[in-house]
Image (tube, rainbow, N blue to C red; front, side, top):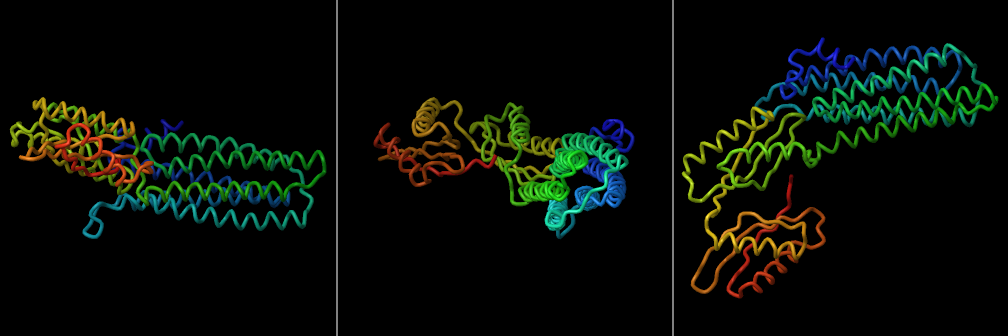
Length: 388
């Protein structure tokens, strides 16, 4: 069904890096969500009135909040697709994250209000009227929400949207919440023990938790989260596929919204290569990255001595030296500058975040071990973190 809807409503649906296509995916998901959630809210609200059940009413308003979420998501995708301007030179893609954050705040507020209503129902319980019509509505709702979870998950995977993946999880939690309501009604009908308020509280807590997780997923990219490992690997493969490039490092990816990135990296090239030819290769790689990943790329060239056996052998010794300190350490930009009284070994040491040693301790240990190789060697190092 998902593939059928995509083919019917999205032209060039395979071109997921195209912002117009991505926008249509978001609008399709939002439109389907609005229609089904409003329908489910209407049916459940009627069922809640018939049975005087706070748990069914809470579940109904949960669907109404989901419909509101779909409206905000749809508007967010539409605004995120606006072109760049003088005030926002990198576009408006982060609006998608902001809309997700706004939705999460509304969901949390709804959850708090439902918690209050459910607690009041626990303190002042009222008998719930059993209705087969209401049970059928709830069972249909479980099936509908299950399909919506698969639908949004499918769309989210296709375009790499955290907002849609969060919506999919929301729909899945709705299935669980509605299932709890059905069990509560059945339990009360057969045992005559009123647990409606407690079930309503469970549903309200599910709503609140969904709001919290949605806020977390929306806030993380706004704060600047690490890029996906698959995306990083694709960039590495693309750059290293060119034979003039010996290696890459200092890869940094700035996220300006889903499908909108600014990439910078250092490309290692032979120090004796034709500088004009290498510059042309770098230009081609930047264009390839732009067309393939819809990003702006800036590449800095780092010349390295590939055929200098002395430099290469010493570099390998330093690599082993770093591994003896910790297997997580690595280096790049290794150079030798020989003088009359000493030789400077210049290189960058890459350490992971939350490393057990401070930068000063790493520097001192490397310095000491380099001196053990040769007292005339001085280690001139820069300690840095790997951003990708």
